[in-house]
Picture 1 (cartoon, one colour):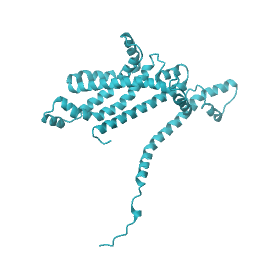
Picture 2 (picture 1 turned 60 degrees about the horizontal axis):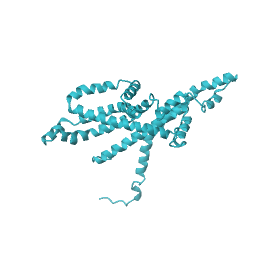
Picture 3 (picture 1 turned 45 degrees about the vertical axis):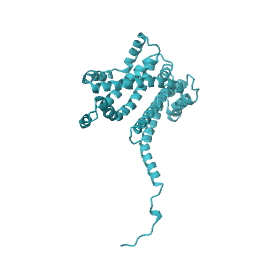
Length: 314
């Protein structure tokens, strides 16, 4: 036997090794995102200089002067009505709309965002209900699979911009006053399809061996659905919700455009376009993107809670 070595505490791993590894992993994940973001910002600023330089050169020509490139660039960064607002102008307008106005003000993006949020949630809920019920019927009845599924696919080939005015007109003709119901229908039209396709795939995901096993135990169709098909479809269901909630938001914004609405992020962008205020239009666009991000995060949190309640690892 060899002579045992003396214990050396320095040979133990440092307690900070795990933290350092975690920081390294986080940095590796963040670096590609930051790189793409930096590239977008560079391209955006270059495009803003190019598109907004026309106005600068026109003004110089009218004044009978010449403007160098170094003099032109700063003048493209702070125009009142630029063709393409640079990022810092959009950020300033977005900040003013979110935090520089009272929440109840008609100029507040928080107020308009809440109006759009309500329409999105109505359409999202309706889309989940319609998509889930159709998926269950398609899986249970073959005639529904052969008759409904092709029409559901064909329905998504119709441009929503062309369909939205028709939905609004029909809604008014049958006595559905107001703008909320047509917006919800348009939103549901876009959001039901991802739920339908994913739920059909999920409900059919159990293999024949699992189905035969439940039959061996004497399980009914309802018990097979509740104990096997439905739990197996949950990963597909929540994956579809992330797509559906974004589609629902798009549908709500599109529904605000042809209704003559004066409230909502879609109406805000339309007003900016009609009155030649690109900063209003771009700030509304980014406010919609922020709202979409919050909605997707909320769906992700609900998914984690559902996984924990079903006994899965968080």
